[in-house]
Image (cartoon, rainbow, N blue to C red; front, side, top):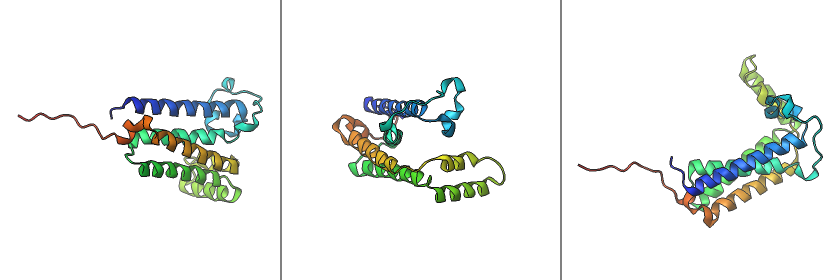
Length: 175
């Protein structure tokens, strides 16, 4: 796949958003309950998170925004309707993951994954995500704002190349 200037710009926006979201998790949350941050060496995890009252749902907003942009670069939606469909798909996925953190659904998901794992820990980490997560209705709003922001970014004239891009086929010569 050949990337246009707009595609590279969108990847840059998405990576920046993801780095901002990871930074927010790293510096404003207790990292012991965050699965992907537990992979970092303890020297990189602060002992005392910084208080940030307005940062609670911002990682969800940034996650939705970034993954919609990255999906658009790969899928190259050509119409506003397909952009809207892509944005709604990620919004739905974000909301399902958020509702999955409610106590009842979290336990059911965990049990389902334990059954699927056949006694191994293959899927246990996913169940722990839901069990240790906290449902926050503000995250639903954050996901919606992130999806709307991504849609507006993609629907703007600055990304017209990506919206109208066609797959690149090698030129053939006739003999």
